[in-house]
Length: 384
Image (cartoon, rainbow, N blue to C red; front, top):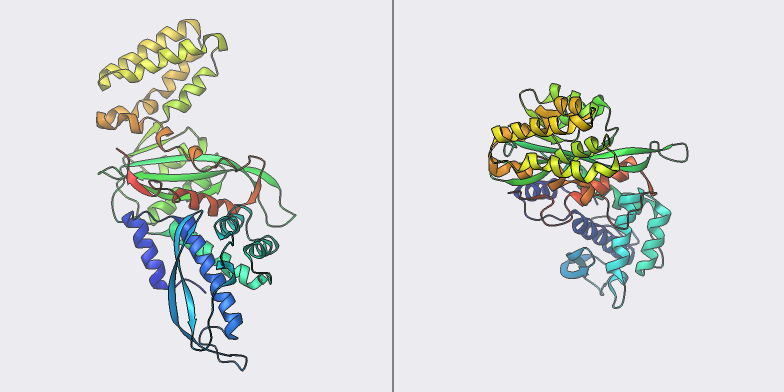
């Protein structure tokens, strides 16, 4: 049962308005509803509106049922029959639908579509007959439709002066099936901050974080969806990203993440002096105005270069980008001088997501989309 155009429009409007849409919970609801419809079809002997000699009764509307699951409360519709009664076996008392159904959805997200795995989990729900391959494919297609709607929704509803670009790395099979190689790929996420402080996940993709072509395609896709008003892009110093920014966001400044730069700086410092150098470097960002910040940078540069000559050229080359935040309102400085406030590494890799786990590229997109909207404040919230 594919999502209707009206359902897609409602979902997109909820994403845009920031109504707390939880993609995991919505996916659990869709999968559960599909399983109920599948079982009802077997009892009735025909699908909705289908003419067949095997039909033994007809549908007579639905009744709502609110369920508490691990993903949160979900409401499903249980078909009513003109003759006889129907109650889904997977909803019978003492069925552990909250854990098992959640596992079904996450299996589909993380490992990709595996009919055998999903069938085994559906049996665990209490449906001893399992589920057909075609039904698994139809359920997972709905999940991909929801993720696709989120990834391609229009972005022209407001301007986003600040854009954060961050990445985390996962082991990905670059081709489906056994022929593909397992490689490390970046899950990149773009997060926008509107003028009123509203924060929204704008887009995500999987690719090579050092490849300019990948970054250019990703950034252009955001612009094609209506992204406008970008004045500052906050990110790490990925070579491909920096090159792509000059082409895709001409006129916008680039804020090099101060945290990532500090790590690069400390790589040239002996470990015995690392704490001292880190403390001195932090004094730059404690200054009250742009001129004081610039002067502090030069003072720290000269102080460190006397003992560590490699630091001088490094700080000279990075000054403009690391201090780009000083050209914006001081009230925003702490939020825009690094990617840490919105770091994808804080939420895109859950505690039970092993670094050794291998998944497909599509599964990575499903997972990153779901985690982008699966908790309050991750989809749309206030950044200030």
